[in-house]
Amino acid sequence: MPRFELTEHGENVHVETVSDSTRLEELCAQWRQLPVLAMDTEFERSRTYYSRLALVQVYDGTEVYLIDPMAVADLSALGEILAAPGTIKVFHSCSEDLEVLYQHFGVRTEPLFDTQMAAAFLNMGASMGYAGLVEKLLQVSLQKSETRTDWLQRPLNDKQKIYAAQDVQYLLPIYHQLDEQLTDEKRRWLFADAATLAAGVEAQMPPELAYLRVKAAAQLDQPGLNRLALLAEWREKEAQQQDIPRSFLLKDPQLIQLSVQNVNSVADMLALDISRGTLRKYASDLLLLLQKADQLPSEQWPTRVTDFRRVPGGKPLLQAFRKAALRMAEEADIAPELLANRKMLEYGILKRMDIPVPVPRLWNPWREQLTAPVFDPLFASHSP
Ligand SMILES: [Zn+2]
Image (cartoon, rainbow, N blue to C red; front, side, top):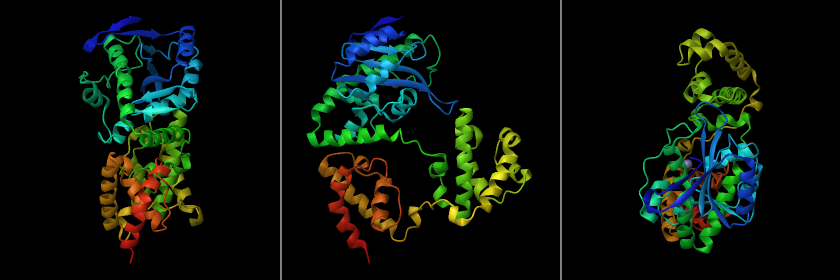
């Protein structure tokens, strides 16, 4: 069905499948004139390092379009829409979409409006799902999602198409409702956060820093962390090169085991919970890597990751900061996790203790300005 009517839930919407460049360019020329477009993507990455873009859905307020990136030869017009400064792109919970779109088009999606973020700015919950928001704002209950479906299969079946179309069909009405409720100030904060998210996907983490993303890295001592850094860098590069998920090589707990246990031989590795396939292929590489790590002079070891739980006086301060943040969020009428999640609270404390700590990605000036007048005296009153 290249074109069908979406009649579910009473509201009639035409749905068109777009599978050639000429039609896409024609549509993009129209869309460039519009102030706002609702968008969503479907992709697949369970077996690859890089996501495979399977579908891009657009609702322009009149009709829903299902753009097939596997069929359209030239998608560049769509890339221009993503970057078009006069058209607000509305997504729901956009971080994964942004990632896959950036990988595919190499452009920053902006200006950007995320309805999940907007709901948090309106104190409806920090991470409202799409169906929940549709239910709350439009009193429409959507069917169960097709998240387990294979979006790369062709042709897509009718159920998939209906689901994909609904993902954008209600996004635009939701956007209008949310936008209407936002104060100018909150709208500024929202666009600032969304822009930071969009910019963030471009700043790819270098493989040398991949260890920072490994769970439990903060609990390792310096020699262990040094081994982990080399192992994680190796895993990142290998996964990228082979385009397979990191976990197909080594899972995080296995990286940690290799880093902390005294591994000197293949036999030592066999005692760990590592797949035979990985060992057959990489055991000698990994042994060499561990030796190399232990020979590295300590000046070249990676920066220590601060384990907040071990920071003296950290726990009571975190409680005090969290309480204060709750009050501030209540006053501002926004979701508390949006104002300052745990990572941000820890950052606020460590920074004031002069302990080196990376700035959380979404720590935008508005958060600093809002919280500093409360956090500063609070920190001072807790200091000896
Ligand atoms: Zn979707």
